[in-house]
Length: 156
Image (cartoon, rainbow, N blue to C red; front, side):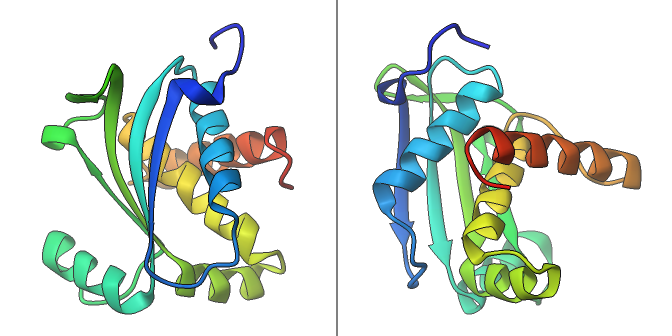
């Protein structure tokens, strides 16, 4: 992990297409901190906070599944890690999070929608940097990392 965190070393661009109740500056800061905790000293990504209709369309068009999902990621050139740059920052890719799904799942799991959204953002980042969750073992590893990261950014 880089020695000192600097939010200015990260570029998180947010497109909010649905009401989500989060502060954009806080989302950028916490997302940057997640990246830093995962060992990046600088990086960029785009984040879309969408509703179920939009994520359902993405899920259908890119994954062949006509149902809403929680989070979808689009890495650069289909490979994990940066393939392009924004200014001097490695661009990791795009993350789309369904706020509607986050609300439902938060109620089901007994925690806040805010926590669930950040859980999905962290999950998306892990996919962008090469993690997979195709097996129960991989999924368990990702969930443990996500829980640790969220605790370190003040969410538990």
